[in-house]
Image 1 (tube, chains in turn blue, purple):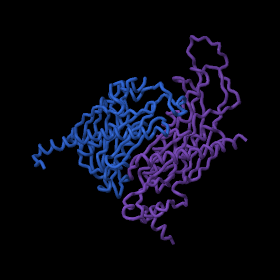
Image 2 (spheres, rainbow over the protein chains, first blue to last red; image 1 turned 90 degrees about the vertical axis):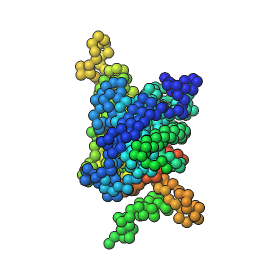
Image 3 (cartoon, rainbow over the protein chains, first blue to last red; image 1 turned 30 degrees about the horizontal axis):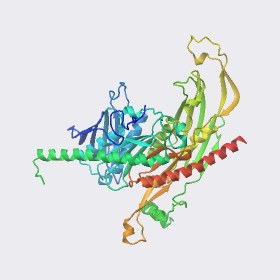
Length: 263
Length: 298
């Protein structure tokens, strides 16, 4: 299976630089301090934020900043095959670490010394780009919780086939085994495994040096890397526009409910 | 009596390091574009079929590989990685634990990616016999370059690995019965052979430092210079969150780019510099491994 058809379209009819539909809501739980639900195509994610509150474990208290504690989990029914997914397996610990790293740099952690912010992400339906969707959802939940951040974090995943980058992959595309129809320029193409390179980036808008997270799966040649990162950053910018619209809408709704003056 | 520099290091490590970094130097006398020397020793564990010890700065890692015979699944053998550390969980700092976690993730992704050994090449007899390689990683001490040292040690141990020759005794068994490894007659000879490595991936760690030009005019001062610092020490790594870890193989093949958490954001052009530096580093480390292999063969 090739990522792109001969006419340059993807399996689900998108163009290479097109993201999936984003559908999101802020403030879905009343118990949590902040929460959000996000659909990115068929990937559905719930995120909840608790805090800032006093750090639970004394040994983990940081004197000068707050601790960001994340948990990534997948529902048993999230994939086509039902599977019990215990917390703390290798993949989810790795993704948890990525979430923590991302929000450690996005949240103004020095505002809350000796405290802790918990971010929980649950993947309800998995259809590719889980990490990116979780970051987007968590970012909305943090906004809902009113946690000060350097900006709204947005993330996107990007793959590449024959040097042509495609953003926001779905599950079928993520697992695609690609026979290379046209030979790549680089010499190692023949011995490269069929796995496509995938890259997840998280960015803060504004300025050009704003990559918060960069995670590459599978091999890619140095010469292609820049094009892939560039495409992924542009994808994240599209996502950012969607998130911003959602936040504005949410805020204006809240303002109407509270009968604030529209200024 | 502690020198003023030592006092500054304790009181204000940020300022201490800044004074060095602005001169493109590190406190241990290196230039910021220099890596700490790597010492590699192959065959340190005589009972293992392949082993390596790597020391890079304060980080020290021993890796041993033990092959076992198994039945292949989906036409490939297995590589099982176990990481053990002498780190005491109570007195290890958070950044050390984080480094250890990142190292484990890095090793697993390299194995899953067939970056070092193609697991299909571990099959000896199709659908009957394949090697399972048990890789034991023992982290003796943690310092800034832990991931770099561990990846080099893993590649070294796999390069050092000599597998015994193995074959099935009689192929003339009736095909009706399913193949059982425990009942098969295996012939194991003493002739050892090396494993063909796909690539020699090398990991490099960087942190970034944004400095304003102190001796420029006002306009220049605003334009911050982004500095890439190679191979940071433990204290520097803990101080400057947002390290970037790059694994590069031969001919500019990039296996892993991992960056996140804190510190300054990084632009695409900075990242390109980092990958180029890592590619240069890969060549020198590959040379070290090849040299060690030659010495071992003699």
